[in-house]
Length: 90
Image (tube, rainbow, N blue to C red; front, side, top):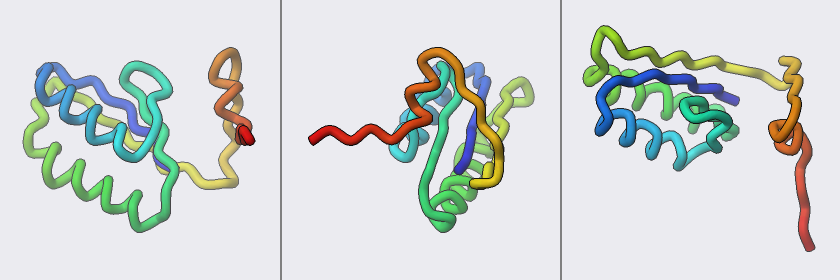
């Protein structure tokens, strides 16, 4: 799983970046995405961020990618607690 946090000053780039991330994961906060997928897809996302978006970032922009494994402990409170459980509707 990847946790991607960003602070991008340019509106158009920030919008494009968030739209790209939303293809693969869900928004946890305004500028934080949680992406669960196969290792290959996660690696492809990181390569695209580095090679495509990375060249467009300014010195004032900040993008942090946390690579989390199943052994990482994640504690959730409030609304985020709902994301901790798989919901099946029949």
